[in-house]
Length: 469
Image (cartoon, one colour):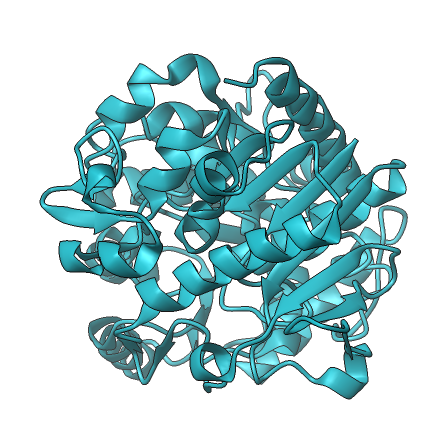
């Protein structure tokens, strides 16, 4: 089986979010399972050519390299006009006005190159709106008759919406600007190219695959997704245990594992000291690493914060985002200096110390397509407190003290009251040290590796080939 994997960002070459992590990890695992998978992405000016050994392919404006620590070939589509910029999609918080033109060019150039290469993939796997046009290009313009197509949604909130006049730069005419094709509320949506023309659609968790078929989470396209429901699937993202492992993590104060869980508390002490909060081993410490935005549940957390600070717990937050939340947390730090640590920005080393040093990890998201934080926190023996949505619903089971079952604390109603109740239950459970340590030991043994996800993708690729439209 030959697979072409198209993504606008891939770790370690270029990253703005979780898509890059998936695109850097999943192809590597698929290649290990013996499949010919190749990646295609834009050649941004921020990519270090020497470091990654990029070489120009003769006769085309395409470069080639290998994905580090793998045999996966990566093709880079070059064009200084479109990709010689400081950002991938935006600068100073503003989207580039020619994004539609930039990624239409990328898709055209990618299709053209693959045609010239004479390497016809069995499956074209496109990710998010930036690569969605590749699917109709393959089907309608470049005559890849044997290629089946899979379109992955990493977040339904990003649909690649542009003024309708920009259809001129896509390479398609007005015949494509209809409600059953690319038209979206009298605008153009590039994501619809993937949703309409792909053979199969998938997203990053089984629950999110169902949620996007509802008006609440479908972003205006739930009807289209329901009409294709037999072709919509959800596969959980994995995590890279080479990067996330407390036994080998170079950034934490003290390495530990399943047999040395007690050393986890050296990390708690280091985290408390670093955040200038009271060093109290017996007080539960809740960690948060997140973009500070409404989607991530910070509106209900903001409402609950004063009440949480009155409970017997501490809070350490790392993230950046909306100014209103920066202000809220700075005020909270002044009010409760010994109970709350605030880190407004991003710091990879501190993130790892938060996973290692916290007793609990909080994700009160309004929606969460997959979520990696809860999977990482499992590995570090840090018990998640989450809202029942998307990938959080698929991975965290509510703890029942009487039955001694579960692996986290889950709340359903999107309210500050439900959030506070879940935190109170977690604090109460923490008092029973024997039960708590059993839960910590259990979650550290979970396997959410990319190999598990990769095998599911292989099955989905085969299903996509077998059910090609």
